Image (cartoon, rainbow, N blue to C red; front, side, top):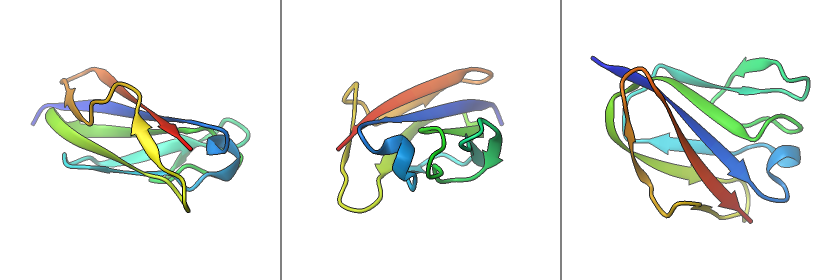
Length: 101
C-alpha cells in the first residue's frame, strides 16, 4: 500500500521540557521517532523530557487519518488548524500542529 510521513508538532510552555506527549492515529504506521536533548533521533512514540517537541510517524498508510494528541497530566492540546482528520499523501510529509496548555 501507499505510504507517507506524518509529523506532529506540540507547542506550548512545557512541551519541550516536560516530554511525555503521545499521538493516536487511526491509520496504520510502522512506528515513530523524536529527538533527544542532544538532537539525536530516537525511536519513540512519546516526546522525551528535554528533547524536541515533535513526533514523526513513518510509513503511514496513505489516506485520511484521525490525529489525536495525548498530552501528559492535566494539559490539553488543540489543533492549530482546527482539523484533526488529515490527508496523508504517498511519498510526502504531512504536518499537524497542536497548541498545548
